[in-house]
Length: 193
Image 1 (cartoon, rainbow, N blue to C red):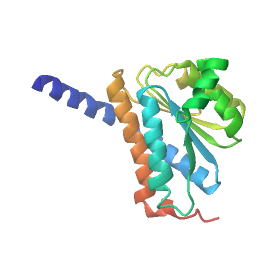
Image 2 (tube, rainbow, N blue to C red):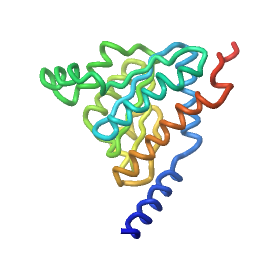
Image 3 (cartoon, rainbow, N blue to C red):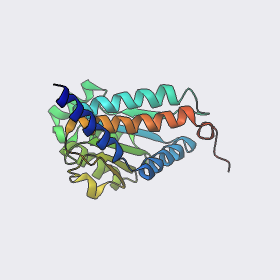
């Protein structure tokens, strides 16, 4: 058992070390721009990534917003179960995120998706719809990269195929973003014009 735990920890450290710091910086800059321009930020995923999306929006909407000069307008597309089930039932499960964006998203908003496989049909459709409507797209992915790697505006790949390690690393990235706004004073004030 100790060997398993040691190997798992070593694998997790390796997954975390594969995070490209410059890509995290770019995402923080995009979120800063969204804050300055009062744009909306949408996040979504499936399974563990859905839970990560909800967790991240909680951190951004409460913790980060408590520190910044303006509150983040942000939402997890995973959190309205009634709407998701209506869309899945009446249309198709592959449209549960894109059809919410049709109601909520506006040009220059941000959509961030999290996917270990990178090819979930509902995330692919959401990114395709977003791109065709002028929304900035970000994909946090696993080592397979998948379809999303070729269509999202910004991608950040965790160099691992293990679902747990990739999802943990994605949540680490989400925490870096949220805590940047909680802990870096320059991000808490308006950008000088």
